Image (cartoon, helix red, strand yellow):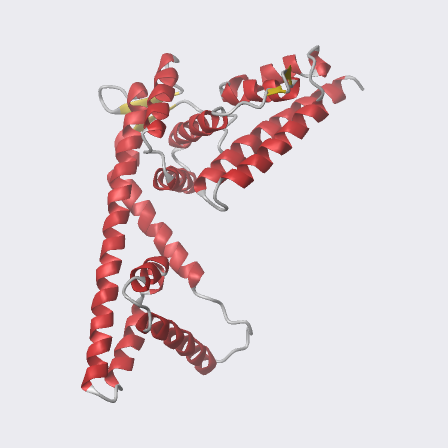
Length: 316
């Protein structure tokens, strides 16, 4: 989750999430996507011959699509299917070239292969550049809590470090640096740190970055006023969104009617639902931005549900 309720004290060296680490994660992601992209046989009992035939048919269809694409369509088609250019593809393309009926047709296949490789190399180069850029942006965001020896103590001893982190993050977002490449790199680092199981501090640090990002984006527009009237539930939600995750429970307990506040739980859950709908409408479906924002709102909802349940239990 984006929000993290437990943050164990830990020392993390910046090298742990440096350039090499992000590049490694990116490669593993591409490998995983490549494996996922290979369609599984519909029938579990399909023979090896049938599987090979099916694969060949699919490759031939894809190769024909590439052959008949114009100069404008080909780069887009290659970039969209960059993970499909694996060993089986190149072997099939070579086989197709070998059985050509004329030298001109064989030359066409050679030109096609060269064009594909050129586009693939450009895609890889751009990916590496994005990774380098994302790493630099992440380093600058974490700089306020980074010690002189390039280590990060988490949670930070000086809470002003979080405030400075937030300022840097907002500045980077304003300049357009916190794009999908950045969010995907941070998300991948969290996944890798969780899988290793020995970097709880790193997970907490990167989660905080995503928390600050989500809070900043969700706070850009206010829905607390409608027809000149204050919408209490919306204002309450916006207070939670902009607050540090560690203070959510205190805010919820004080703001809901169970704790003496003036916001009904149902009203809070309704405005949360509306906010989720707005995120779904205004962000690209399946994008990292959408995932981060929805996860942040989901965490608030879960915290609110837990507080409401605790109040109800205490009154029984």
